[in-house]
Amino acid sequence: MTFTLAHLSDIHLGPLPAVSARELMSKRLTGYINWHRGRTGALAEATLERVTRATADSGADHVAVTGDLTNLALEAELRASSLWLEELGAPEKVSVVPGNHDAYVRGALDRAFQAWAPWMTGDDGKAPSSNDDFPFVRVRGPVAIIGTSSAVATPAFVAAGRFEGTQARNLRRALDDTGSAGLFRVVLIHHPPVRGATIPRKRLYGITLFQDVIAEAGAELVLHGHTHLAQRHTIAGPDGAQVPVIGVPAAGQSPGARRPPGAYNLFAINGEAGNWHCMSQQWSATTETGPLELTEEKVLHSGG
Image (cartoon, rainbow, N blue to C red; front, side, top):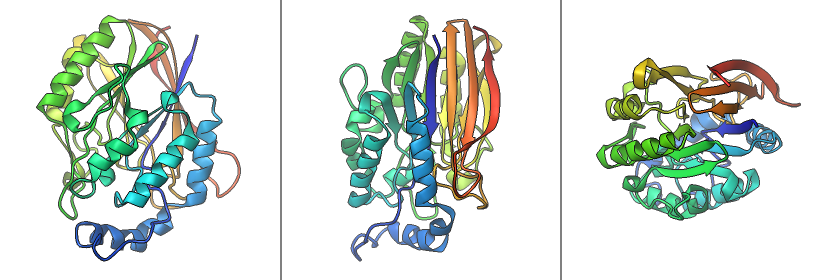
């Protein structure tokens, strides 16, 4: 039986709510200016609504969201993001990990963990309250959804992420356990764990550590966001295997903008351990109205 997994990222819910002068006395000031100078034209509520609706209507068995649901991590944005998640699907059918915009200022990430706990609760009944508590693991059919966090507060003009020791050890354990169970392991992370995937001030610190864990323990698929691009990479797994690392454009990106239009990816997974088949499709809002179009189809694993 085929299991389908949809992937969205970089939601950047708009419009930006009212911001007090006190809230702007931080990195949020530069983010507020950037929003009004650029993001309002590049990101469209109508496009996000179309992509969200298409994802919800796709019939996917599960939906993964890899961060940046907010812009400045304001309280009003966190409330709106929880409502958006509810629209996307029930917590048992949707998994979310945070991005750098969700950790925009110190303390914001803690509030995101609280707001999104139902969508980050693992099968052990626990939801992360810090990055050291990741990953969470949710087994759905033959698939293990393994959510990590690269989100950290950073100075102005920096959008980097971080993957460190405690989380690396936890991830290794989760991959070992789910691999021994014969599951198709999907690792979620916001920042691309690949060198050169983005500019230095937006990179992931801890790429080597992340790749070492995957090389030792293995995984079948890594999903990320952050760059607002349809990126396709591989990293080394055990015994010469190559693990696909797939990024998706920002869900609300306007057609005709500098970056690719809003999209979601759909993965059809079947088979068994050692003999998986996985087909990926990208569905994009290439026009201002109308249904999304199939813009890419690719076999990631050819067994099954």
